Image 1 (cartoon, rainbow, N blue to C red):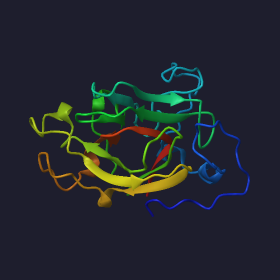
Image 2: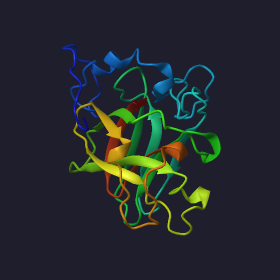
Image 3: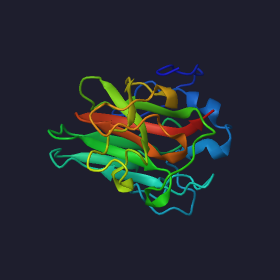
Image 4: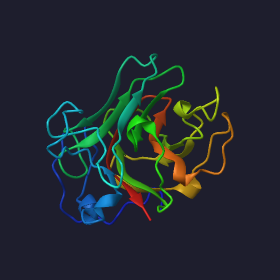
Length: 230
């Protein structure tokens, strides 16, 4: 259920002051899920370059199930500061997590996209019903808000040229994060376009380009353990 936290154990993890509060070992319950469902846990496997600024973290997706993608940035230049990277500062599980933080934009906003295939090619997700992830606001977030998470397909991606000059109206849903790590399950059937772009319905699960988080306001967001779900 969207926004539902998993039942945690009672063993807390010590964290830095600016990290999400009260993280419990909830993510460990899913450590033995099928490996081919994991998109990224931001942990380098020894063959990755230091995409996130450290030798332990990576912005490349796990090379499994025919996926060989990466996290791509789209920055609104009206935001004076933008951070989109794998980081060791905070993590729900392991050493690394994704950090997405920006100052207030005044134009179209900032987005960070986990492209499933190199070159932003399509990927067939027909075998799955959605995507789960752990997420939370960091201490430097402003007022809480429902963060838009969703899916980019070849129908909405500018690179595919299907949507012409009116692209980017992706299939999204606002997720009400808190300052504590929680697990969220984003179901494909619950995602919808905003209605301002080229109308492309329904969401074609065999033509998924990537997973996107797109904000049009100041934010401090942490993401970890992004997985496909049945």
